[in-house]
Image (cartoon, rainbow, N blue to C red):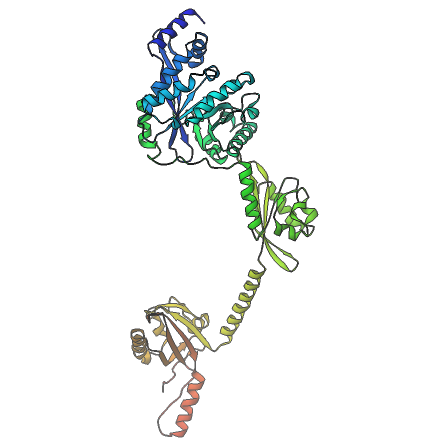
Length: 537
């Protein structure tokens, strides 16, 4: 580097010209701001904005790094001390500073002078800080800070050659997924799997996982699907000045006094335990089948159908353990493995009926992983359905063979149902018999009396029972008919329905009238039946 840059940087550090900006770290589910990463910025009067990638190495070589870091930490703590929501501050510490015994005092003094709780601070280190020759001294430094509540995060995880080994070297609290994986995970399956693995690893170890470099809503959605709780990147905001960070917190900070939720554990071990609990407690027979028709997992009810133990099913072909599957059912399984929707079907087995459901299982990128099969015993339901059908058939036969026609009306007399047999007999539809339409099929001499009697029953709730001549279209004559109705009442006594019957009593009526005329000759009773001009006695 040219000496002029070293001179300008030395001048900048001496005059506190390098300042902190704050990039938000956001809860992916709620959008609230959990914390900020503190980033260094320098605007040189001659060269303009100079990236930390350029001036941090210069500061290290010139021995300016301890002073520069102390200034940034102190200023960041002062500016963030009274921010709403008490967000965390993540401080980048280069590997060389971890070897400095004065680092803990510098950070803790800055927090004390600013009045900020050390538990809000997190130092972020890279894997380069964990070289074997430097590890012991770094561990002592970290332990001092941890004893005061300062958290430790591993930055850019996944880019080093010994990440998994180093995770156990220091008591980390946070794991940051390198942005190169996050930004390529939508396009590359390998990156997706690495992100999923890092999220699962962090959750299994009880670490908060932050995805760096988030730039789109699609990335946010996928990270949530993978169980990642925190994100950082251009999508949520660039490094901002202290007043901009405060303004953001006024609308998106965690409520004061609220505890930051523990990360949602969606690690593979956690999911497996949850899935196994569901499998074991389910009365349904459940299994997961892969592309080669092999059983990956199955519960005890499924194993019982296969006459074997669940532990011996893993890896075996479903056709081998369930030879009773039909060709159509095997075809449905293949269709589900191709992602085609499959309707539920029934399978009779050992005099039992099972409702079989096949559902395609996809990973976070919607790639097909296999098929979930669930079989529910519905034998009892099938028996009830059969009994209901038999009962309905019996009822239909009874109604059709009965000489009476039934009807149902609301409390105000509006018909809800009239037997089709009666509608055909009088040649009127249900709609035509509504209102006063029912009276139009009566003999004119009886209409007023019928209206009065029905109105009285509706008002009083008394049983309605009348014998009336009704015009039957098929017979082309007025036929004596008995109309009977009784109210159905609720527990409080109010009428909720009227149930009634209509019965053709023409033959009985003729016989009664004929008998009366024989016993009382000269009464003048005339019976004309079988014509449209039936005289009413």
